[in-house]
Length: 217
Ligand code: AP5
Ligand code: ZN
Image (cartoon, rainbow, N blue to C red):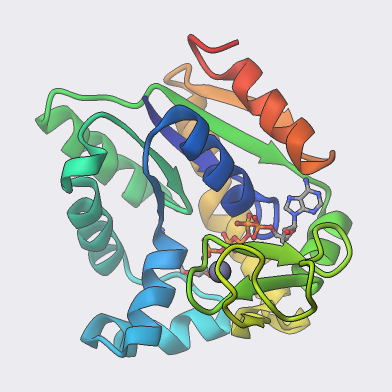
């Protein structure tokens, strides 16, 4: 199954993607996580995008599309994938459609996570992420680690993301409304969109997601 997850920053895309990918046995592909891995490894790409992420802007399409295409071309993604944070504007959505069509493939579903803005701000303010693996995500109040500052999964150090400062969050939300929300209508015209409320505990949101995905509900 080929799924795109959309929703505002802090909606819980990464949290749900990790759980859904495991349930569906498909890789979780997060462009945000790929950029952060490049930054922490000090690659050429990481150096080019570091300040863009810190300020909450979008990385230029040519860099993002190339990085996503390279990841989707890997062996484990041939039977399907769950995209988190990509595509993020109409240009990226069209590029994805074109590359899937070239391979004789298409998307099966677009899952749109709806969360009110005040809740998103609370979720981002309390988020703590693992330095070793950004798929390990916690929240000081809603999903606290057993030991403060330590990842339950791998023992890595938990930290607050550079782009989770209040003024950067405002910028990321504005970018989401302006650039990313239009892809929901783009996919709606293809009959692919299921919108669920993500204002519920994590397992309940996973249940809602599985109930609306085609062939699973
Ligand atoms: P990215 O990493 O994709 O960030 P984002 O879209 O802003 O999303 P977040 O990671 O902030 O939130 P999330 O929805 O995954 O929520 P999470 O599960 O962590 O992108 C970062 C940057 O990279 C961008 O700003 C851009 O610069 C660049 N970039 C990435 N992709 C790009 C692209 N395609 N093109 C160009 N640039 C790109 O949850 C949030 C918190 O809430 C956590 O603490 C979690 O524990 C908690 N939580 C989750 N679910 C629940 C729940 N149900 N109840 C209570 N708490 C919950
Ligand atoms: Zn970890």
